[in-house]
Amino acid sequence: MQYPTVNTKLVLLLGLPLGHSISPAMHNRVFEKLGMDYCYMPVEVSPEDLGTVFAGLIKMNVGGLNVTIPHKINIISHLDELDPLARAIGAVNTIRIKDGKTKGYNTDGEGFVRSLEEKTGISVQGERFFILGCGGAVRAIAMTLASKGAGKIYLCNRTLSTAKRLTEEINEKVSDCAEAVEQTPETIKPFLQGCDVLINGTQLGMHPNVDKSPIDKSLLRKDLIVSDIVYNPLMTKLLKDAQELGCTVVDGLGMLIYQGAAAFQIWTGVEPLIEDMSEVAYRLMTIDSEDIKS
Image (cartoon, rainbow, N blue to C red; front, side, top):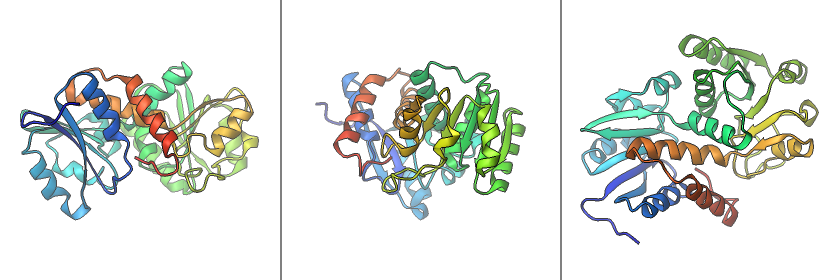
């Protein structure tokens, strides 16, 4: 085991609460295995203290940061520069510090895309996506899908006006490929039938509401790829329903792993050990699947 010294580069996770984050275990496993003098640590910060704490941290030997709820939007005002995709998304989850300057990125969408492509063998380009929900994760996923050449993105949300606003942003900022869909079984069916991938971007199905699904099983079909950003539990009711029909399913933990891998490369310039990150993440989920969350 390598112990920190005055030369150790710190990588920090800012958020609140962070008691059950699996990110430190994933990153520190890779730092240790690659023999890198880095240490990943969680730092709980309240919204009112964010600016003060961040200003102090970047004066330390910090090589980069992750940012999670509730700071992904408010951190932007404290940064020197934004990656274009992060600017379009309007949220940051990764920060690189180089030559005293801070630059914000958003790797959430990249994490989702890499997980989807690795587990299914498809390429995003030209595919048609049906996404349930319009929260922060969906913004990142949809913007990234559009930037990678998705053929069509249908956004379905309980509040139709919210879906319409996000589709307008995607079409104006990234690519003219998004359309809002009203959330009723009758409206969903014809749009979903023409899609290749269904994504649940809502919290329906998350522990403790494990008996909930965001969509009726009758709307699914065998040749549909079904993905869920929820990873607690790993197999949500939606994924179980889809698997029973013979669909290819993608759990939500892969998104967490690959967004972390993308952040690792931004901080260090080194390709991370995906297999090690995955082993740690899935082992921790198995040990305590009811309590772990990012």
